[in-house]
Image (cartoon, rainbow, N blue to C red; front, side):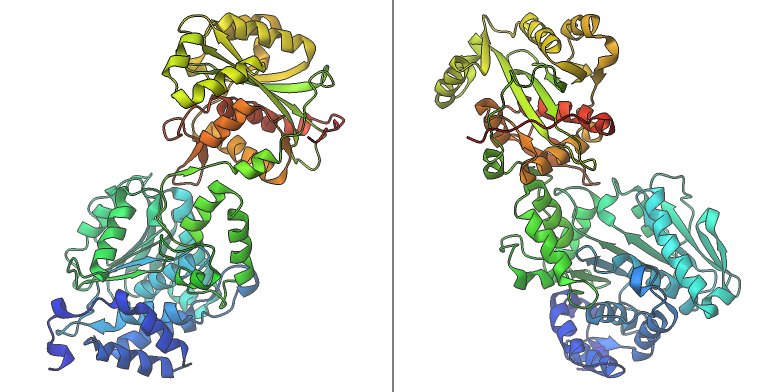
Amino acid sequence: MSPALISIDRLPPLGADKDRLVAAVAQVNGDARFGVLTAELAALGYTVDERRGRKAVNFCERYCRHTKGEWYGVLFRLVPWEFVATFCFFGVVDPDGRRLFRRLWLEVGKKNGKTELIAAWLLLCLFGLGEYGGEVYSAASAREQAGQTYRVMASMVRQEKVLRREAKLYDSQKRIYVPATESFYQALSSDANYNDGINPFAVGVDEVHRHKDRGLWDVLRQGQGTRSEPLFFGITTAGHGREGLAWAEHEHARMINERTVSDPRQLAMIYSVPEEADWTDESLWVLANPSLDDFLRRDDLREAIEKARHTPSEEHNVRRLRLNQWVAAETKWLDLLAWERCGGLVDEVALRGRPFYGGIDISHSRDFTAWVKFFPDEVEANILRGRATAHFWMPQEALSTHRQMMRPDLEAWARAGFITFCPGDRVDLRMLRDRVLRDCEAYEVREIGFDRYHAHGVIDDVAEVVGADLLVDVSQGFMGMNAPAKELEDMIATGRLNHGGNPVLRWMASNAVAEVDRDDHIRPSRRASSDKIDGIMALCTALERAIANQEDDSVPGIEVIEL
């Protein structure tokens, strides 16, 4: 049977054969690429309009130039995986001779050239496909990201005289107009107003995982109904968790390639390292990084993965962004082996008179209340290092609510002076107040951070003595906790924190789980952590104030007695 007569519903999913196609193209150069790929596609039953495919590839390689760094001004040379994606998306046709694929879902690791590739495709749709009255859009989750796509496209236009002659650029509007075909490109973002009546010919969505909802995506998809051969492509790295727009589209693409759903109009190409695989195995990295050893440097990826091996939250980011794995939005956080190495003796007597930043975490009712002091050492080029001490209070009756196996430890820590048990079922916050005020007399208080949502009269009592300007509300959300949480993680990894071996703080560090948002901000998560993390929250609160005042700190270092 002629390939042109095969029902498109019976064609094998091209995304499942992408590695075979890329390997075939990688064996040849120049025009030979077209013949090899056309033959491979024909063997799978696909019909190719080689003229269309060549036109798309030639546009990218003759009119599009790189826009950054050492590659600036150099004409594109599509690496094999880019060549396959471009040729297949624009050159494979249906039995009527029209483009078969109307939609493309492409997942690939960070630094594989996604943004410049999507910019080249959008310019192809604007200048090279002959669509009169064409409306071409890029869709981003925020204005800044939308501006990034426009800036790359505008740079490509300005560098190439043929495109520059045909186009008018409107930087303030993030718009490109082509008078000859009365077509335009417009950058859109989800956080701006957009018109439901738009009629897109082509749409490119970069970093789909950043979109918080389907609003703009669905408006653009549904608006293409009157176009005879519309194009819609979403390119992204893996996102957080398993919900939302990006996850739904990822699952649809995965099921297309696994033949559990039929969607012959969508090309689905997913480059990722399998979640069950050893993510540190260098031989697997190319599965998510098809540009590896072309323009993506292996040593750069190796360095990122080596760092992630010793930093749990960095592991989350590297596996998601560089290996394209859909990891959970929460991850076990602090490296306990590194934590143990940070446990030199802290002599509080020797610290008397030294400046400190305090962090208070007040319990809801039957939980721990924590008071942490962080004593910064001499600041070196804005590198924070120092000593931390911690004390805890908990209700005596709360002992019975803890796991049986934890009670002996809690009692031992109380005997050692790390925990104070308060009679009854609540923490006596007067004890906290008195301890804070004693410490403010013994040491030089710079600032004390607290969470206003859990603040009690004790905060007012302390403010009356030390001054309200030294009590600072610190948000426990991503915006407040991101910087100190990442700083704490790095201080532990590099040995810049001495926590004195406090066993309660160590237990809480072992419980801590970090939550990550779509912008890669992190924070300790009480909800996701396996047990109490009050001391870690108080430590992060103290560090937040130390970071905020970092440039003002310069005190002599203190000798650490290693145990």
